[in-house]
Length: 239
Image (tube, rainbow, N blue to C red; front, side):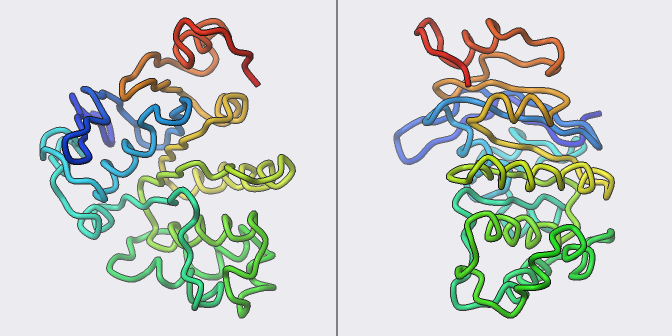
């Protein structure tokens, strides 16, 4: 039994259909990457799984329990936390206050608290009394990840965490993921950076125009397979 899976997931914004029968599955302790160009449907998939976007109950299953129609707070209570695209920190709160927001409503059993988040990202302890939005972009991303971890999730959804960050900063952030996995969380990473995604993921799903166009183990997918799934028939160079 998969830890979480989607079955024929469709998603709409009003009359506009954004997802067309998406099937993915995530096993316990696994890291998967969801790749695709802008507008492929990756963020919509994350919004659906996290409960931000309502769906049919049976289209998302958590250990066979239908959760597709649950609200975002109820999904969080099930042990699913999201690091949203753009970080979405509270500008009026300090770093530490932003982290503590992650404990509101649900705090599962697990290894994550303020001290363990500070051990993962030591710079946050140094800056804990600073306004969160006064930090650099990479440090703000660390706050967003730490805030999600404070609920001790079983599933951590990370939406475009490398967007707009320098490669050296991205490397430092991704270096934290093995320790997050050791804490017992399965990780879903949404990425446009194909090379980065393939480095960290056990398996990869590629999306285009709201559909899954390729899936498989990272080590089994060829450059040509990914190119075709990512771009269709158009010619582009992969990073």
